[in-house]
Amino acid sequence: MGHLHLEESLGGHHIFANFKTDNKSRTVAIIIHMRWSIHHVYRDPTGSLIGVVASRNGIEILLVSAYLPAKLDLFGYPEIWEEDKN
Image (tube, rainbow, N blue to C red; front, side, top):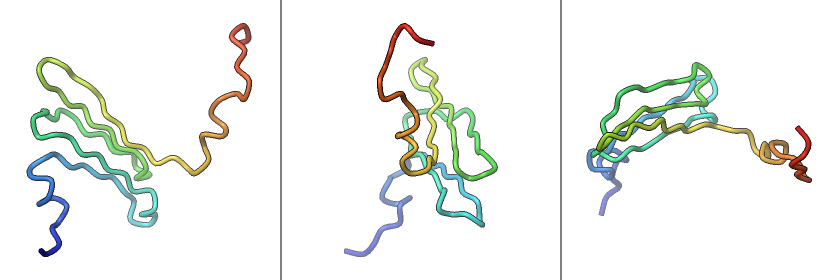
């Protein structure tokens, strides 16, 4: 069995990617099932973000794939949550 290209193995599903030629480490991609209709594709010029507006059966959603630096989650929430404080 030979190696299949990604597009061949996905059998017609929608594939979108974004990258910047001078920094390919931030490449992002998103795969959407073939039964969804694609309306808009948004690509950030840094290559680290892609958004796709897709719909099916009257439901429209924005799907996003984003490159985030390692350990960013350590700074995104408080260690102790206090509901009373804003």
